[in-house]
Image (cartoon, rainbow, N blue to C red; front, side):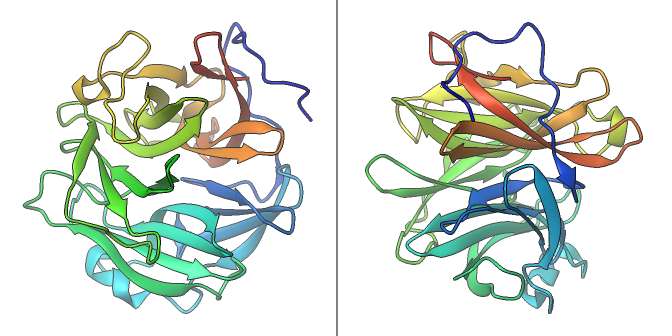
Length: 304
């Protein structure tokens, strides 16, 4: 266990921390279970689940919806492959936000399911959170829930098109609180996706992925960050450039045999913050990456 959070970044990007077992993942999200151990979900047929006792050894644990999720097929073209889940635990239950879409389309939807245990087959469909049509200027995929310092619930999401969006949720239902859609990051239609907002100290950190996912070892995915004192922004990078104007401070990129690291999740655990992501091996296989997060003297995160 860490004895403290380091404040000096390493000279280069670290190797992913050691993980064993079933570590083939894409778009991972992870939560610490109240009873101990960890539950991980990732893109897969009917949302794939894994468990771990120690954040190192992982084993497959079935699917969230082993009987299928027919309410999603309007958006998936009939495929069972559901994307980019977001796991959290609030009020004695697990929440799972997840995406239904097809590659390259913004005819997409984000749904919510809840479970008392998180186990396969125990998830109850709670409804549609937000959907987008081809006429929209944004894309309803890659959800992430954040609860702000005053207890308000927010969902960031989005990809390409006009960028990353933020909506407020009703904590009682986990569904939308109003019709407002805020813009919090964008690259003028360029490659940005997979937002995660995590609070540390006096700031909200907006983590995103730039460039190309899903190309195996040719992927150029990289992890960027900006921060704000307000959950609704504006988010600025280290140089002061707004993330709505293409800004972003790079935290992790491909190095050596680690290709296209991205789609980050941030786990605040008992021993500090961790970045959980996927990367591609030389053979193109998607793998689970976990590294610790440190913060420098100015409060900017790095991985080690």
